Image 1 (spheres, rainbow, N blue to C red):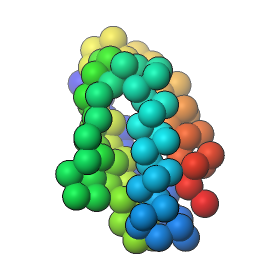
Image 2: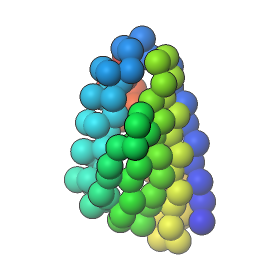
Image 3: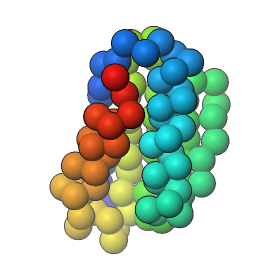
Image 4: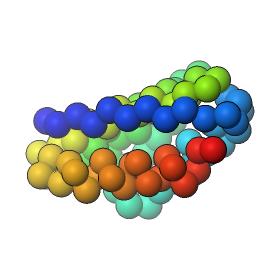
Length: 91
C-alpha cells in the first residue's frame, strides 16, 4: 500500500474550505467511485482502490490518500490529479 500526503494553505475560512473539499470529494466519487462522509471537519473517503482523509483547518487542508495495489502503480498520476483538484478549488 502506498500513501500520498498533501497540504494546501487557503484563505477561505473553514466553512468555504469545507465546501471546496466537498467538490474535491465529488471528483473522487466520479473518478474512483469512492464513497465519503464527514466526521467533524474531516472528510473520510473509501472506494475504487483508494481510501483516506481530508482534514479542513481554518487556514490549511491536509490530505492523506492510501492507494491499494492497483493504484499504487499510478501514484504519481494520482498525486498530480489530487494537487490539481486542490489548486482548482482552494483559494
